[in-house]
Each structure stands twice: as C-alpha cells, then as structure tokens.
Length: 112
Ligand SMILES: [Zn+2]
Image (cartoon, rainbow, N blue to C red; front, side, top):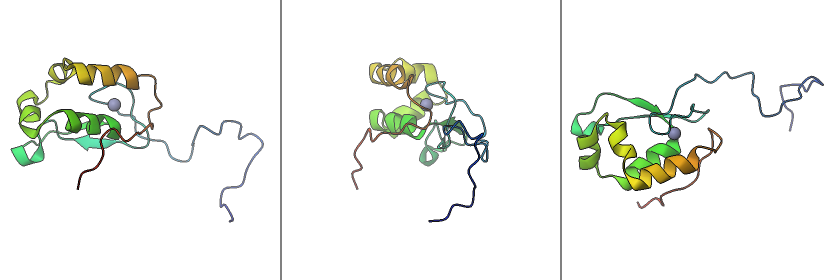
C-alpha cells in the first residue's frame, strides 16, 4: 500500500487534515460546526413542498427524522426552537454537544 502523501516530521497533528479545508457551517439543530460529513436538511420535507435547506450533522438529521413525522416537521418548519422544545431533541442536543463534529452513531435502525 503506497501512499501518495509523504510524511514529514512537522506533521505533528494527525487530527488535522490541511489538504481538505471543510467549509464551515453551523448545524441548524445543535449549533455546533459541521464536520466533514454534513447534510443539507429540508426543515419542511421536500415531499411537502419545502424548498429551504439548512446545514446539519447527519446524526442530527437522523434524530429529527426518528422523532418527528413529516407532518410534524412541516408544522415546525424553520422553527428550530420549537423542535428543541421537544424533550427527546433537547436531550440529544445536550448529549451530542461534547461529541466530535464528525461523530456519527446509528441512532435509528434502518427499516427497509
Ligand atoms: Zn448537529
């Protein structure tokens, strides 16, 4: 396995990836900066005519989808405060606050 990037002694921060500066976005739900993995979430579901998108962590989007139906998401729309008033969402945001931006966990099992 040959790597294209040669290693340098000055490379003392393995956490940092200087090659790929990720665009800085702030997650709509939890307010943390997004990491390498981010999604553009439709606060109002596309199927309900939603056009606006907001940057989110994949895990935050999963949490929303797991806790709200499309009808509820449509009703809240851009009202993130309303979503955060939900105890389950509040708990998740408090929990995820200390995680790495690229932290992902399977919060909901895929049912397909
Ligand atoms: Zn988030």
